[in-house]
Image 1: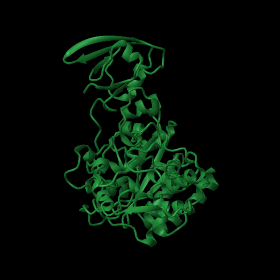
Image 2 (image 1 turned 180 degrees about the horizontal axis):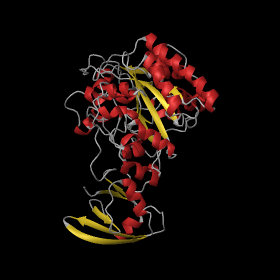
Image 3 (image 1 turned 90 degrees about the vertical axis):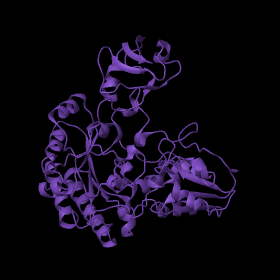
Image 4 (image 1 turned 30 degrees about the horizontal axis):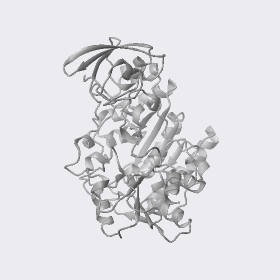
Amino acid sequence: MSAPVVVAVAPDSPAQRAGVVPGDRILAINEQVPRDVIQYQLLVDEPSLLLDVDRGGLRHDIEVEKAAGAPLGIEVDSPLFDRVQTCDNHCEFCFIYQLPPGMRRSLYLKDDDYRLSFLYGNFTTLTRFTEADLERVVTERLGPLYVSIHATDPGKRTEMLRNRRGGTSLRWLRVLLDHGIEVHGQVVVCPGVNDGLWFEDTLAGVAERFVDLASLCVVPLGVSRYTTEERMRPHTVDEAAFVVDTVEAWQEVFAAALGRRLVFAADEYYLLAGREFPPAEAYEGFPMHEDGIGMARSFEQGFLGGGSDGFVGRASGFFQAVDGAPAAGFRAPRLDGDGPGTPVRLGVRRGAPAAVLTGELGAPVLGPLVEGLGRSDLRVLPVENRFFGGNVGVTGLLVGEDLARVLAEQPEGHRYLLPDVCLSGGRFLDGLVPDDLPRPVEVVATDGASLRDALT
């Protein structure tokens, strides 16, 4: 087990007043060794703390007095202080297997850790879940959790996960629900594998065994040009239409039986099938917005309303209130300005013509909204993802290499707005940073209100 390292100390916080400094390694808190930031939060909630700290090889005891539950005022370097529970499945559709060589080492890590599901919204298959894990989740009420289902038939799920425990691990899902843990499910539909009648069977299985799921999102698989799996291919238009029709039919069933729709199809299916998106109210608060469910409608609401986007968003357990939680994962603050929606790198005057950079799937959504402003100096600039290739067209997977190729052909002196979802820790997935691009860009929060503010 590695000790958490302090990476930042808030000014005038209890930690700073007690003498904690960046670089300190926290070996124990009140003589207990925390194994992750979840346990860390419970320990630092106490009013009197004794920190056993390693500083440059020398150990120090630091006493901290504060109000019970008050923030300690430090940020640590990792959410987990022990070993990450890695994934032992070998799914054909796993996108990590489809990454090109030479990327950052951390991108190739496959986790199946319920703690990262709670903290960051990562999906877990529960194939490595144990009785001890269940006891902790139930005792500490670690919800919501996010579970990959893919198929409810034991044989089909075993086939898809390529793991003999795939057929039995959904028993943990039933137990979690029985103990009142909030769980959101996911089905990745793979053409020719778990679509068609198998997809119908999966939704029937959910209706029979897991109707107390908080929600179920249905998403298409992403296929990059690096896949080596012969069965994996993008959906056809007819296959996408079948998924939409099936989901909407089951929504009626669930609504009649439960008073809620329960299952939702990703925006990508509606785009591929050439269908209109459902109205905003059909998404019932957008519980799976981060997975591309209703993202277009919520973005539209924010853009047209000029206020915050109209979605609740993925619940985060108590992650956002965890004192010391590292800024990592999709909740990381990506902007360098003063707050959400603050653009950075203003390279040209605000009145210059502007282009909104987006992935190919985002262009049909953004195009009508930008056109609706009635200004000839605004345009949407779709960027083909040649880095990953295949059917990868989401904005969040745009890399510096592709952006640089497109921007090099664009006129100088224009404003280029870049959604912050393309960046993590200030870098693109290929390791480049905005300063590497041939034109100055303004990084804007990925929501409708922020884009409208930046354009108007």
